[in-house]
Image (cartoon, rainbow, N blue to C red; front, side, top):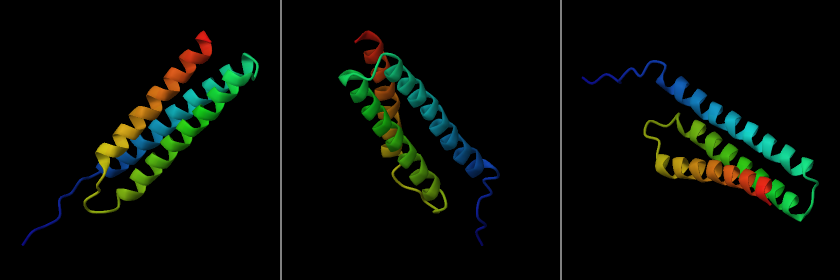
Length: 102
């Protein structure tokens, strides 16, 4: 007779970690938006704003999808989710640098 493994608070900690990731991405996106508006919303600022919004939305969607997938006994696709989150975070950082230097 096999008993299911007790993972304790592990799923809740993982859910909170995904929420913190989205919160951090939101702060970065807001700082990027502020930077775009401070420099005057020219073409580069508008492009940075649009790309920043797309990155933030992608980050939000990936995190929500992962949180919903946690209820399954064997969640799949973690590597793709981590790669997508990494790409979004790097792009937000690069957009910030480009807006500062442009």
